[in-house]
Length: 130
Image (cartoon, rainbow, N blue to C red; front, side):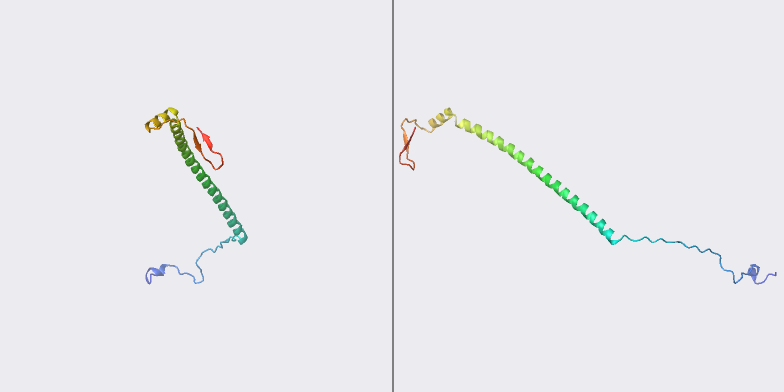
């Protein structure tokens, strides 16, 4: 072969019938079936039931917590009131002491009387007291 038309003359010619070589492969694509509507509804209602039960339980625990808070508050109030009651009882005992009553009567210039006092009630006969 002679050198003509540059280096293209040196390349072997392709046969027009020759196709490019590649291998055809088939890939099987598996399409998953969707979940049926009844099963979806079953899952939905199951989750909904679980949420409702959890909500009820949390609500009850919240109520129990509130009751415990009220009990604590009332216990503190009861303790304070008991202290006040004890203080008032001691003051009453001091005020009802006969010696204190006599001293107070002497300060106010009260005089002890032996006369009987008659008090008339709704009845016919008067009631006598010392």
